[in-house]
Length: 161
Ligand SMILES: [Zn+2]
Image (cartoon, rainbow, N blue to C red; front, side):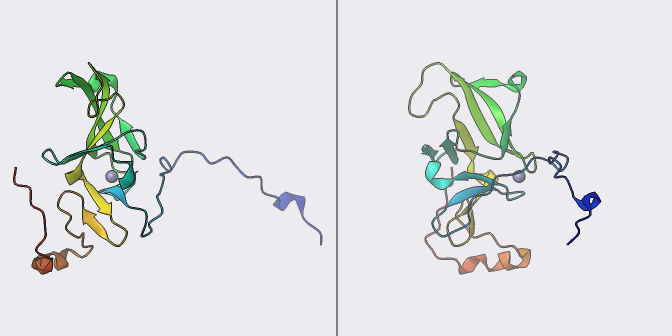
């Protein structure tokens, strides 16, 4: 056993050349979570939901949201006495919603730091399959199978507002 010292490799610290490393949730039956609809980056666990707005098709979360970045304060805007910045997916830069960065008075909906994610921008892992978060329709990887969407059960929710 003669180890050649020239062959000993020194572990180089990994440099961030290949983009940011993304957090992944365990895709199990018990773990339900939301993903970016465009690139399927994992975004937030379903159980972390703080509030749902079914009319605006939005869900509110706090700092449990992962793999996102927010716009700079120079891009902020005001709406209903709250100040927002846009929230982007770290994987594909798609806008997923907004984050409240300032509020006039805090309450259950209105809270500083709260993320408001738009359901049409997300898909959901429900423990068995991937669903479109806003319609709960299954996501098919094969586009041709979309034609068979009439085969789904008649309990589908359609919000026509
Ligand atoms: Zn994405």
